[in-house]
Image 1: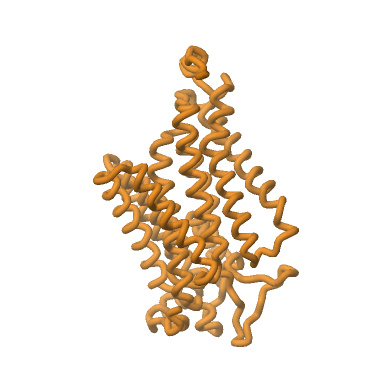
Image 2: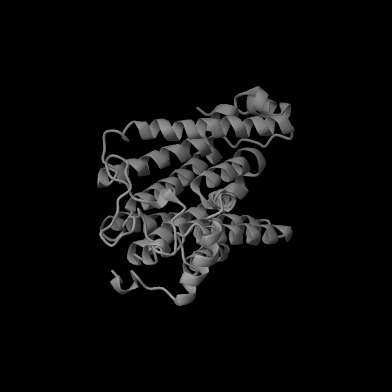
Length: 338
């Protein structure tokens, strides 16, 4: 679909990418931009949302994470329709790909070279997923912490850095990152406006159904449905996990710094361990390019986020060394439901 957009680019798009990409010929800048690019990845999502949820403000975490995840799904859906070639594919003689994570591999793990003379990628260029993720996440924090105006400055700087890194690494055009930023920002603004007008639970459930249908549909229109299935699993797991936590746990934040840090560190270790252990149950037995793999990834991320939002808080809520004394006393005095 929209095949005419595959190789579409503006001359300034190429020139801008060439300028910043040239900087990465110097190893220092290559490492620097790769590091900055991580600010728009799933790993940073997990770290920041986990820190916020377990140790700072669980409501803030939910308010930021849900629309950010929905925005990422939306961005990947758009990618499925606009299969735009990346800068290093459209100008392989002048632009070098510095991010091998977006390159497609064969069954032996080797990068696949297309007949046209450039490497095949696992996803298309438009819009930038990193920019959507960074915009949704950092602007989400700024929007929910609007009384602290400094967060808007911080979020803008972080988003600009991520966008710049994607240009420098040769994997996105300026129009990709600008569109990604705009999509992420517009979605969270629209989301936060709507929830002031309607019942939020009903709205979230409606979005889950809508994006669930898009996720299933991505099997037919997306070049990388696995990403959409993974993100949908994450938002579904978060939605379920938060509901369970609210009803059966309702943990309190600790005021003791070392307990806050310990909660976060233990939670992060457990989360990444569960993430990889679940993947190992099918990684070596199911082809990653199959529909079955997509559904298994959806299930994995659903379980992962339920563990993060509900199971782990349920566990640490019963451990005195991770709670303040008054929190523990309140838990002991709470009557047990029949």
